[in-house]
Length: 58
Image (tube, rainbow, N blue to C red; front, top):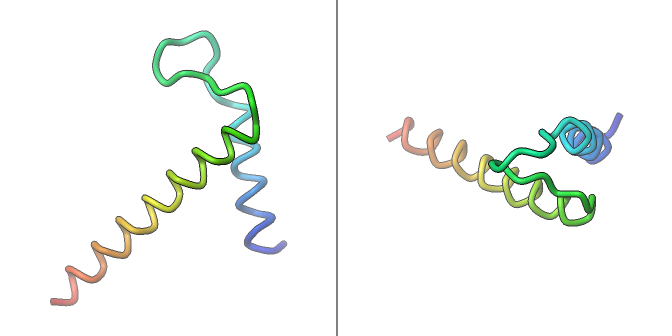
């Protein structure tokens, strides 16, 4: 399975398992909007991991 397909399947799984009817975090009903926020969060995690690994080498 390609990396892109795994990422999409993981996002779909988290979308389907998001908490319903709670105040925080709010549920996002539109998958396209959820996909956007998922990608932003994924990028932030990658950048955080990257900066941590660079700091450990110095």
